[in-house]
Picture 1 (cartoon, helix red, strand yellow):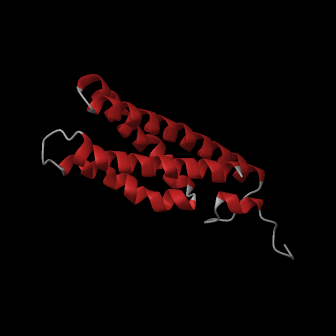
Picture 2: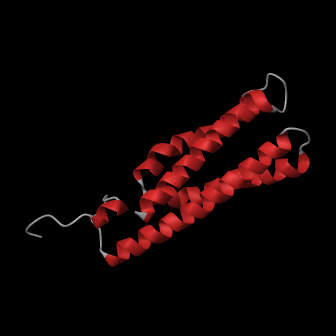
Picture 3: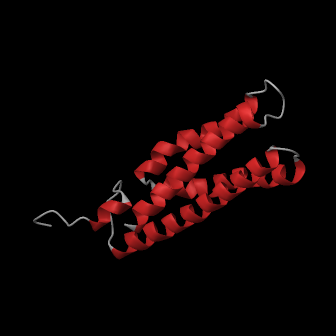
Amino acid sequence: MLLAALRRFVVGSFIALVALGIAWELWLAPLRPGGWALSLKVVPLALALPSLARGRVRAYQWWSMLVLVYLAEGLVRATSDRGPSVPLAIVETGLAAFAFMAILLYVREARKLARASPATPGRAPEDLHSPAPPGR
């Protein structure tokens, strides 16, 4: 139950970061008028969504490090930009920080659950709660 809630929170945070990054760099406050190249920064987030939605612990472990790039970008732009970019950068910082915390909690809970009942390779952590098949 906790793993599913944490997974939904992380996936929601990533979707929000993707939407924010696209809107920010294309319409709300682009660095240059007509500049769209910086909006490509959300491509890694979008590519990670399927693995995160499936609950793959390895993807969560990787993204515990990679989401810090978005946190750093938000901090830098919140302190160096002016105008409408500042509140957008603060929102990005908050989303990345909450995603980071939820990722860490997810990995900790998944590992704790895996230690409690050893899983077969490739089995999702949430499947550990399901009863074992008969004859096992």
